[in-house]
Length: 283
Image (cartoon, rainbow, N blue to C red; front, side, top):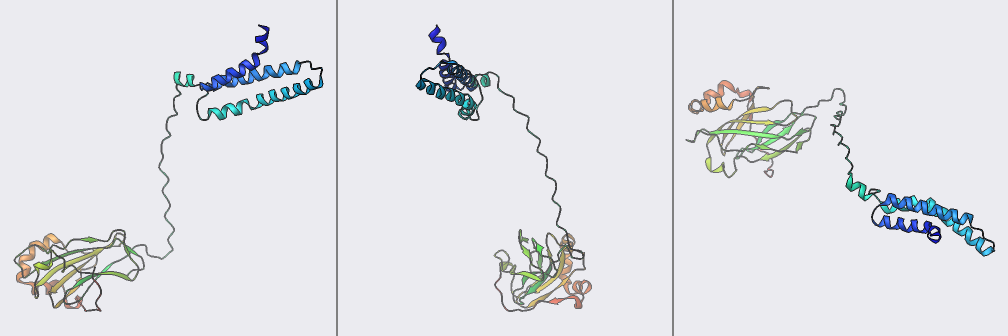
């Protein structure tokens, strides 16, 4: 029994190693500290008479002190992010903290705008090429026009079809027109679904609307085209828009008296002729 008592220090250290193998790091740390303390006390009270034994005693005391001081660091490194006791963690699992509510970020302040500088854009329409008119969207303002768009509603007055030509609406999403710039030309009469429905000399009448996502307002234009010869366009009064339902319901009357209808609502002075320009590639 006395011999076993003398080996208690080493026994506790070995027991601590065993606890560590079973992920019981709290018990392992306690064994390391208590066992090292016992060895330190035994070495401290050991009566060494020979100088060699005195040197060994000094090394033994230093080793025990180092073991006590480093027990926590070594055990914590071995444990890592795991629990100090695998048994306790399995028996009484910890309750996680409730999730924090996700609060919306405060809105970003818009950048300051220089005094007197306009913040909204304007877009306009140009029709070019008399033989086969094409659309150009212009930006006469000092601000870039974002997401430009055109809507074309044209009726063939010389066709039995009472519906407008099937010209799709086109929006240039995520695109823009620089100040005093333009985009185009766009060939809408040469589209596969439109070209077979018109012939040279046919009269086309209706309107074209242009707009953008940051425009002050849309702009609408009356349009008259004689296919293969030319035509004209005229801006509707600022802020006004052609009502497609009314235009469609009135089309049978307009077909019979197109010259009278045009003369009443669109004076000659307000008509911009379609002009020929150096040929550009259509889009």
